[in-house]
Image 1 (cartoon, rainbow, N blue to C red):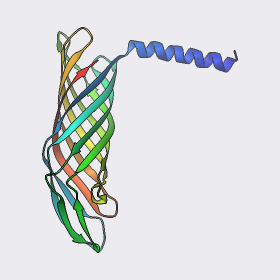
Image 2 (cartoon, helix red, strand yellow):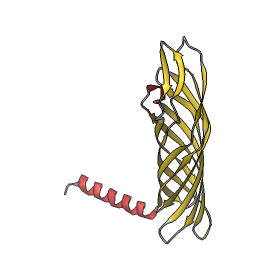
Image 3 (cartoon, rainbow, N blue to C red):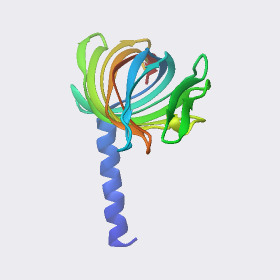
Image 4 (cartoon, one colour):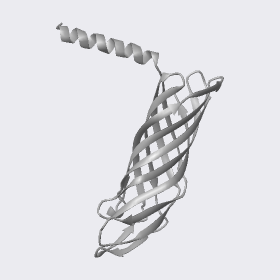
Length: 203
């Protein structure tokens, strides 16, 4: 083997050894985001509107991967997905030469982000885990009026309780704030706080 190949193999071996020495968690779960208020303002210079939207309760699914290079501090990569159908079509009004609405099918979301997480040991493999993070959020809808891209700050609190020697239960409470985002050429959209609750298991 070439010298470069040996260097790569040694590097990968050291990386694997270090990863084995670092604590990690994989969490999966589900829950709900609670009702909240979104604010839409104009993204067109010739318009001037301020519209408040009431977000319904929505189902969420969650996956997170945490690495702890220190026993009390780690980093987290996570993903949320969910859906929020409406009871009926939501009419947003007429401007820029056309009518705007959100269909009864509502919206679904995909949120991907990362952050810092404390891990506070309360004894007997029970942990309290406060965290902060930054998220990219995209919403999907049949209507272009509800296809949004945004950047969201989140604060979360988790409690982990052992269920077996290799499995734990996790309860999470979080709050999300969107300081920047919107629907292209239609509106700026901000919100917060919107609260959410999830339950899951951690491996």
